[in-house]
Length: 219
Ligand SMILES: [Zn+2]
Image (tube, rainbow, N blue to C red; front, side, top):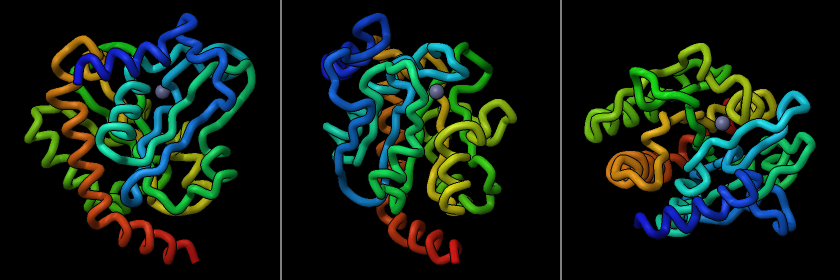
């Protein structure tokens, strides 16, 4: 697993973090089981406020692993381009909006918690079942987590943008601290990935219903 994670990460880390220069497309979507789709829009550097923004190290490897090894649908950013390429626009253009997205990011520095979950514009009660499960899994894997801290609410980003477009509770932002994304360390293998697989399976098992209900709410 360590070897695979390092191999996946080297793809995103190449070219000074700009990713694969010969990639034909900015985003790649791979199909998977169930409704869950893991996303790593900051796997490589992105373009924000007319500036190059550093990537979220390790998030590309995590999502690639969940796609290729655990069988989930996945979207990763392959290469830096000096223009805005929003993952929300990609999802809508590809008509992938009937999925449940787990949007994986990274906090720049270590905090006194390991994971920040953001529910965007929609309140946490809209995600009650998923958040309850996430809490159980955080206790199981000894992950210190917070929900909807102002800086990590998910309003700016895929979570907020997709909610504005569809009105549905179908996307969550998950920001991990650096040690949880280090492909050399044990934490990514013993906590981050098993946690995400169990959370993804939970949503897949009841998630069809989750997205259908969400669709119904959307008039
Ligand atoms: Zn990010």
